[in-house]
Amino acid sequence: MDLSTVFRMPAIHDLHQAKTRRIHHALVRGAGRDIPIPEPTAAAYALAHHVLEGAEHAAHTNDPDTFAWYTEHPDAGAADLAPAGPLTVAPDEANLITSSISDTPYYVLGPTTQAAAEHLHKLTLESASLAAEHGFGELVDAHAPLVCLLTGKPLGSPLRSWTISRMPGTVFLDYVPDNPVMVARDLVHEAGHNWLNDALTATGCEIDNTQTFYSPWKKTHRPAYGFLHGCWSFSLVALYVAAVLPTTGDETHTFLTAYLDRQRTQLRIVTGDHETALQTITDATLRARLRTVYRHALAL
Image (cartoon, rainbow, N blue to C red; front, side, top):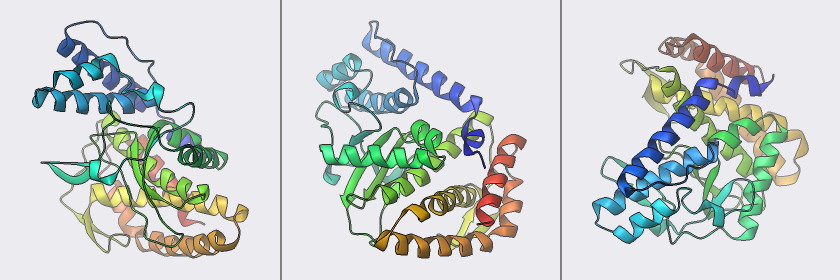
């Protein structure tokens, strides 16, 4: 299965460029002067949302110095943070933000942001490279260009990971130190969520959430939107784990073997509901891609 044909969607590329331009133009209006336009890349799209979030907060709190910093750094200071590969930061969790409309915490790059330690940047770089080796390079490059590493934990510990729609392209995750196989797994998972959000927006799909479906991952009924997100991202993770498993050894091999067995079981549970929920996707091309990935994962 050539995953690149699944992930490559011109409408998403156009969406990224259009949103990046809109944010840049808004920043120019706020600054009252011309600001260099960043090169239109996936990273620029993610960074533009950090600039927008930070500049808006500075404006609302009457902080002209910070607002000026964002107008002077339309890349949110990224040029000083990473030499190559995914931009990696490791913020203190005390610096994560929650908003009035969401309890999910997030982090905004700003004037006090520092690059992650070299060994952490190396970890994300190796993880992204590993994902690419197994067919997920386009997904991770375009939809997880900014990685916020949270807490290092031993293999087998519960690992948190999440994305939020207001910061597309940014992923937040705990990590197993010196284990790019595990970090790549969660990069694929969260990049998948970002991809689907962008795909839904780019194709103009509005999902009917009146019907709910049982999610074995959440152990509860979820509206179609959340249910399809789970089916999609865990299908991607199952495909990644199946591909990488023969290259692993010792504890990681044992852990991921059991993990893949659980995913097979959970993917089988949703078989009927998945096809029903897919009918809420109004774009035929997107619907077909979600179905294809799920069926390949189901066949593992």
